[in-house]
Image (cartoon, rainbow, N blue to C red; front, side, top):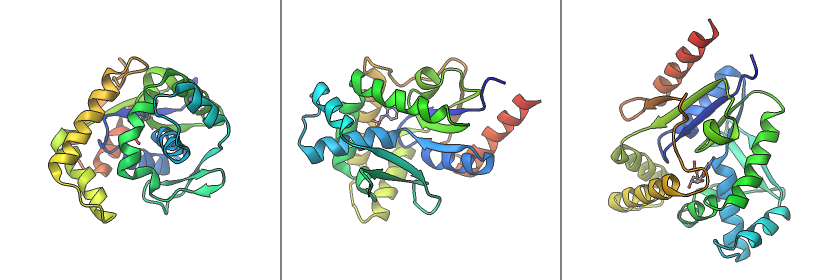
Length: 226
Ligand code: DC
């Protein structure tokens, strides 16, 4: 077996984070949510006042900041992000970061840098890596590849509930429109657009609980091992 990596790609708010975190917990793999890296770049750009389309400025900025993702089962996302040693709490999930992240994620030089970092982490040992381009670009040889989707209404409902839990009230239609726009930007960008790898197994989670998705993945993984 070349590697034991699990690539989990999919649309925004399809449940990748929860599912990847739980799967990694049962398999003992390291869990890495690559979205946190793109969110970190968007957050740093906003904080430092670097224009979101200033590609070389953002790459220079990135070279001056250390992004560390620490697994933490006590945190809602299953990890904590330390930027230059400082915790970011929920800040990376705030609406202004969410609105900015697709723009920075479309920049080839940013993707190149972050993909390098992701591959270095995978070189250390088996990972469950969640993102948009893991099965297609980052780890094309991953042993297991999944593509997670759900209906846009269900994804908007989940995202709105997440915001509400944090005391942020956003009307359903607005959340739904933001998700539709993220889908559009993620899937139409020139650099590594969101798409399922040809050898990925697609799971529609609209009617499934996270544990049911994890169970389906484990069944696929177990069948592949026999
Ligand atoms: O998974 P997420 O919602 O935290 O991702 C945030 C943004 O980063 C989203 O616009 C897609 C982008 N992203 C990406 O382009 N490639 C990845 N591997 C992970 C995330």
